[in-house]
Image 1: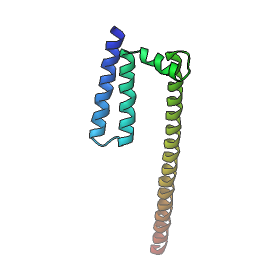
Image 2: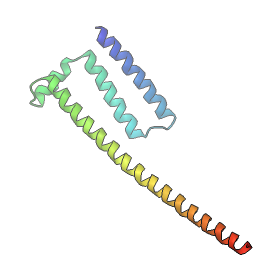
Image 3: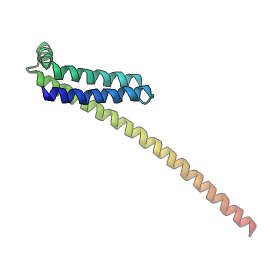
Image 4: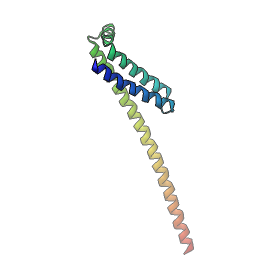
Length: 120
């Protein structure tokens, strides 16, 4: 019972933070709904763990714990994939910014050296 109470407090804190971020437009609607469903399902599973056994049996999986492990693995790989895509996008953006900065810096150095040559 204590683990359920502690888990509920943690999940409710996460949900509060999630809602706050969504209200301040720091999360897309899809991301908000996906995480909201994830944490609400987790909360229900903590209080009614038998649900996983029924779902597992309906899907032809031996135990509810196995179902949770399979779903967790899929979710983890999906999140890793999303992070990979985000990092690639970020890397591309950084490259563009650095390239733009280097080109402007080269132009400025070239122009300043030409203007100092004309004054001599």
